[in-house]
Image (cartoon, rainbow, N blue to C red; front, side):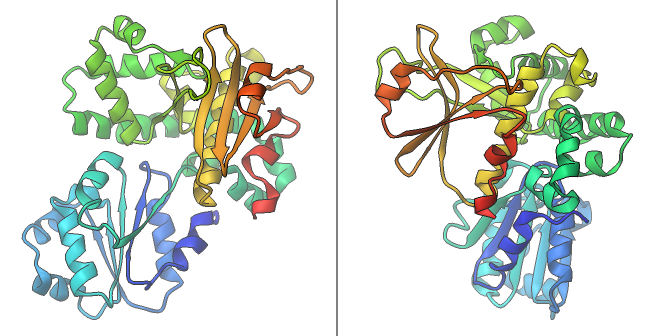
Length: 379
């Protein structure tokens, strides 16, 4: 099994008096990670799966006495896919408050459902972590830098879902199954989508616009939906961990963009699957979009796993001055330009440099990308 960075982080939090909440998209290895953590412990464990109707029936009217009967002599209680259980936040609170000697671990695949149900009841009672598809740094540790670097083109095309990484050459079939049978199925269910073909068209439009500023008005015309519905669908896709939005940095200059946003996919493989484009890089016109999406997704994982709290933006002005990525952390603006070609010349905007004097600049290309997405100093 490929070692996940979060494993050691979570192990240090066990039996600290709070629930462990692990969220992230389906098929990224949440269950496997929890099983690995539990396997290293001597305490007996009770495992419940919210996807099973029997579990949902068992917990329908659960109270403290029922919980004690269910848990028995176990010291660890795991509830997988907890968002499927009604009023799960209140039910988890019963365990953390009334049976504090038991370590509660719960996982969920829907940011929307989990947040709605657990945030208020478990305020101050939980450690929450996000698990993403495999991370470059994890595979570098597994394979060594030389091998993982040699697989860069593979990762740009097929992404980092665990089964995709471990079951070559079945990547296309696996990605299609993950998208159709898990990710999009959940979105259709949560959103009560009446015209799934419209949502599919929206996802495809977003895939083609990676790295570009997105206009909801233009999207609505393209897919035949009103602006409000487009906004709602994009929120659903975010909550399913398929896409995320990158806002513009707008602070010091009147001409900085304020309302535009860019939309990226959490995984290159899913992005390519929705538009059925798996051809080699040499035959593609979208290498810039693939490169940008890859770098931002891996940087997001790095920041999340190492608990580096930052604000993330792109920067552009009305007169077309722009920077691909700006990260605000500890009072400094970390600005980066992404170029696949190491020989590509880059000049940072003097307007940006004057407006944000506390800055650090970097050009990220395929000769140095690993320093951006997996800095060794952090490990």
